[in-house]
Image (tube, rainbow, N blue to C red; front, top):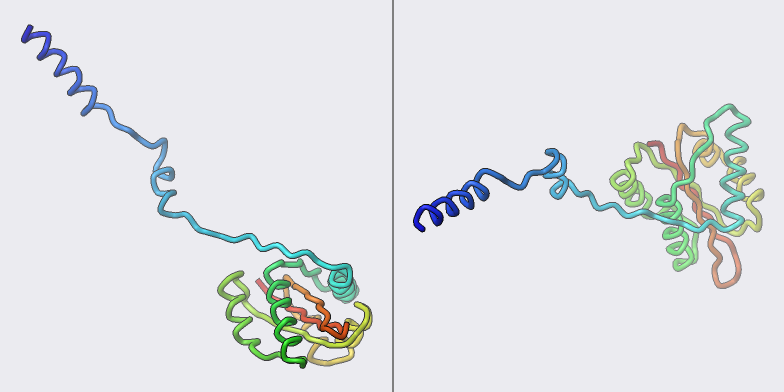
Length: 168
């Protein structure tokens, strides 16, 4: 009986200590520590916003410049700035450095530029106005890779525009 008990004990001992739980590869083991939480930004563009983006890319393409890709994070920042301008009742670039810093950290922007406007009724009208302004035109023609837009109306139905450009 001692032999059977000793043999059984040895089999259990060997089974426990000579086998182990293993990962298929080292990557499985470290994945739990390397998780990066990312939030996927989404933005629902209005017809006017899409038209502004298209007009800007048509203009850039005619100059032989690269087309810019829309980036939801930029449009969300643009929307926040429009809400800020509407609340203040004035058009401005206030807090631009904070927006730029945020976009550099969040989306890896190397450079950030911004165009704002107020009161225009159509996408063509605001784009034409920006193209007639030296600073705004330079932003449109800049070496950017992505852009975002927001168009929001105040209580009186006046449009506020914020257009952010970045280079990644």
